[in-house]
Amino acid sequence: MLQKSYSEGVGAGFQLTENVRFQLAKTRVNDLFIRWLTQPQTQKLVQILIKDAKDGKQNNLIAQPNAFFINKMAMSGVSQSALFSSPNKKSQGPSSPPKTDPFQDLKLRIPEDLSQSLTQSQILQKKCHVEEAKNYELVPQFYFPTQEINLQLQSEQNKIINEIFGKQDFIDAIHFEQITTILCGLCKYLTKILMVAIEGNTTKISKSGFLKYWNQHLAQKEPKKRCFQILKKQTNDYIQFEDFKPFMKILLQEHPGLEFLQATPEFQERYADTVIHRIFYHLCRKDNDKITWRDFKQSNLFDILDLVGKEEDINKIRQYFSYEHFYVIYCKFWELDGDHDFHISKEDFSRYSSHGLSRKVVDRIFDQIPRRFRSQIDQKMSYEDFVYFIQCEEDKTTIQSIEYWFKVIDLDNNGIITGFEMDYFYEELKQRMDYLNHEPILFQDFVCQMVDLLHPDNDILFKLNHFKQNLTVCGVFFNFLTNLNKLVAYENRDPFQVRNDIVDHPDFNDWDRFAFQEYVRLAMEEENQEQGEVFEGDNIWDNDDSKQL
Image (cartoon, rainbow, N blue to C red; front, side, top):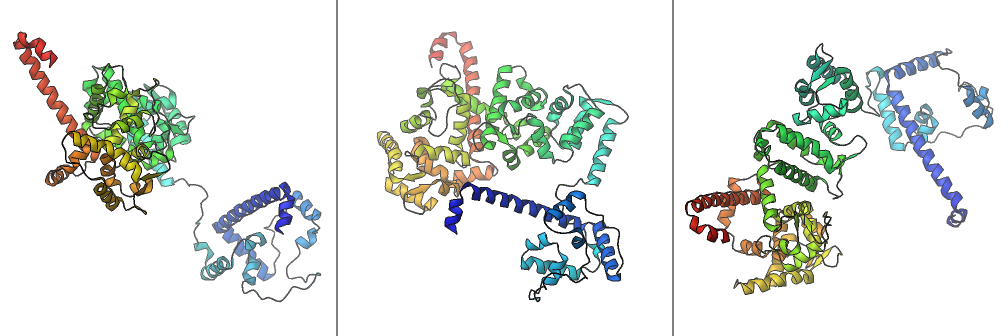
């Protein structure tokens, strides 16, 4: 049998495809039939037909089949009289075998195609359901192939629209903001973007134009889906980097917490780019510069946007939009960018964290092993690349960071970090500790600690899955292999200080703590610098020396 199917070749494959299509079509027809059968009108019709059949009456409710169906039956050798003959009449064909199937009575009540697709257990369930449901009119409709419109919700929405528009045919942006927030459930800073999407202007919107757009694109969607629909281009199924630019422009113009930036357009642009880069870092899991609906739905961006519209202090929104976090990132980049061409060379980058990163790690990053640079200049790191790196470096509890550093350590790219690869990176840090007269940590002790933390299946064979299952301890593993300063800080840490930091800011993650500490340090340096400039102004003889310092 197997040899025959194989010899038939393409023909057999084609028949298999047709058979699958037939089964799928038959399943769909069965679903539609069950849905039709649960309708109240259908149940009343079935009761009438059953009653007429019991009384021996002829019922004219069933329409005659169309000519196409009759011709098909004629071609198959079935006569029309045989098709419509009463089941009570004795058939002229061979006698039927004796009934041995206990479900045979129920099968006779179910269409042939449907009964063949049901198992014995399904038939038993249907039989029990038929016996228990004596009053068919009380059985509610339970199958809805598409999302039905909530009439009550639709009535409430129409009431809101009529209240906002009133008797006017047009409303301005101030009144349309109520449409955005109350009706659509969106952030108020999306108002002008929605107005542009409806009629291409930000001055006024007609009621007819809004209703047309509302019914076509937003009416039957949840607020999060509406937000995604408004942010993306209508021709795309995803959000790109440029799609956030209009929103950021409106935010910088209207948010009270960002008014101080209006005098510095350059910083406005850098702030907007940093916010968008941070959003893509967390949402774009494939790192392909596209945020899909799946990415957007699984993220907290919608809730953060809603908070942006309600909170006047932008620094209280630590995720994505905090100006203090932007200030830390930008200053860190500015410190490394010696020639201020907005690109970092390998030598510039090696100075990050006071030369804390090992040379081997720097080489791997600039070989673009963990992530390809978006910079247009060869062997140069752009600002976007730096934003991605610093988030990976300072918060090693995210999936993006774990994947980034795993690729750095995995020399042969086989998905396993071995003891040889760990020793290769640790050796350089050990030599630097010896040079700085730090008491070195034995490699064996380090490996034992990592085995106890990550619990690999085999000794010194760490897979990516081991890290993803232990997100909170991944930073210890990678810091011991990549960053001397963090290695020493971990060994000399004060447990009481660590506990106090957690108590003071229980909702902070590793990135929030780093940004908070760095912002305080930068603020103190700026304050000292301003005081130094005042002193230098009083003593002009020390100006040259102070500038050299």
